[in-house]
Image (cartoon, rainbow, N blue to C red):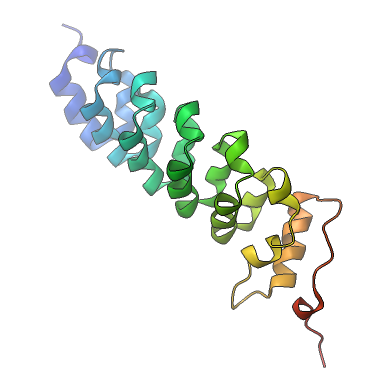
Length: 173
């Protein structure tokens, strides 16, 4: 008897360590319940699930809420799902890297990603990467918008942005 095909063994080890799913047989890596238990332990267990499981919206939302990086292992269809990607970037802005091309240019997603982590903006595309509202994205009470924009621009290597309105410039007295 192959223990990799024994559901009870895989279930028990999956609850202890989500990464144990990698040793399961192909059939069990497609078992929604087993994969769900594994991703609750470790979001990277999603990469060990079968294609059908990685296309399961509810199942993918579970690890996306834990760590946006889990989107790396989601199906292309779910990487293009705005709601799923929004959940992921709210958890970790770096999840924007795994979004479909169209989603990387979506204003709401880029804003959510930028609020989480400034370097995530390097994965934005099109107008979302160039618009002047990028200055507002990362502004916080501890970091003025202009400073945030300067940091973003250095990381993004954006050649030119529209001029910022003067109210954003704070002059030292």
